[in-house]
Image 1 (cartoon, rainbow, N blue to C red):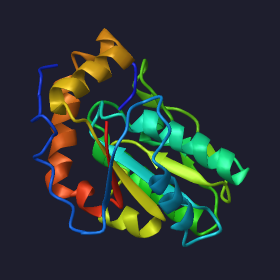
Image 2 (tube, rainbow, N blue to C red; image 1 turned 90 degrees about the vertical axis):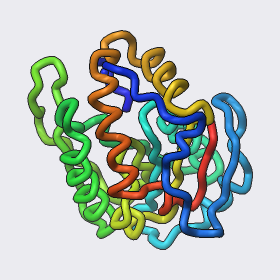
Image 3 (spheres, rainbow, N blue to C red; image 1 turned 120 degrees about the vertical axis):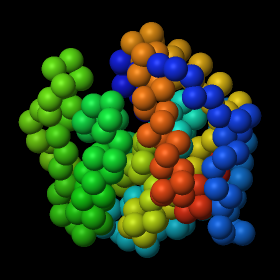
Image 4 (cartoon, helix red, strand yellow; image 1 turned 30 degrees about the vertical axis):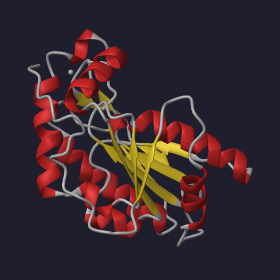
Length: 219
């Protein structure tokens, strides 16, 4: 989550190892540090996994502070350069309806992905964090290669809609994730960290996102 506002510390284990183990033996795993070039095998796999030419779609998920936004931006830049077409990054940070809105945002994400994959425009309502209300509808055009990035984007259903899925995991677990999140979003996030982390950890059991990833990136 990367919204400039976030409580008690729900620190995970050193690698958030309470996450379910991936079900696929074919899942690729890579270490990566912000500022480094992305692993070549990751780029090649992401480029060649496309099942749809209408709106190519890659999912990037991870717990808050794992580094998924940084990875998604680096991936979009690398793919845009390799393919000479612009990849865009979208995600539920734009449409989370408040601090208890992780589940509600998943419905919006799913509808958006379904429309884009069918060649139809999608839409979402940005959230006004200062006034706690939705803003005017924003339309998202189909046909543009898209990375959907954010907490909750990787579920069983969403994986069936996408070409490729990446799970991002902080090697320092909850402690490093919290440090990163507060450094990124400032002290406004601190009172809300525990409230958000509780929802974030709960979905590991219900959605098992890590088990649907094609690649796991350790940051």
